[in-house]
Each structure stands twice: as C-alpha cells, then as structure tokens.
Length: 125
Image (cartoon, rainbow, N blue to C red):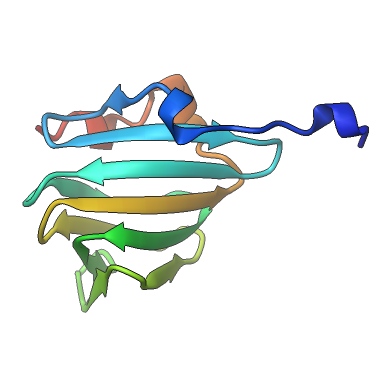
C-alpha cells in the first residue's frame, strides 16, 4: 500500500453522531476495521443484539454492565482500563453504570453504523 494512503485523525475533528438521547459516537473507518468513541450517559442502554463483527470494547472512563447471551446468562462489568472481547455473533447488551467513554474496535467495520440501519440502537431513547 502506498504511503499516500496513510491517514491521520484527531478526535476533536470527527463529527459526533447522536444515536439516542443518552448515546453518541464518533467513527473512524479503515478498509478492514472500525474504531469508535461511544459516549454513554449514566443508565443509557444498548439493547440486546448481535453482529457478525468481532468486537473489542475498551473503557476509557466510567463502567458498562454487559449481559451476554440471549438468555442474559452471563454478566460482566467492565470498568475504566478494562477490555471486553466479544466474538462474532454473540448476543449482548449493555447498560452504563455511570457516564462512560467506551472505545469500540470492530472487524470488519460496522456497515449498519455507517449506513444508519442499526435500528436496534436508534430505537432506544
């Protein structure tokens, strides 16, 4: 790949998309991965869903309570400085225990986030 394809970003220059009243995000997308800053207010809910994308969630500040599986059989609290790996097609949901900045990495990029078809997310206020 030519060096001219290298891109540099500043989070302050990335537009913030409001997803719900309590959740917003900023996205950076490459050919094979996506990096997202996700801002969640306390008690914000990311409804139960799954996707074919592998996901890493790194909590910069705050904490998220994850429920794993369609039956919510496993619970994990991820706090600042911790990372959660979610394999492809694993059902999960999350609730913010406090105001949270979450960095999500997806492989491949979340096409539903790019084209606005992530209706499970936008329908939650």
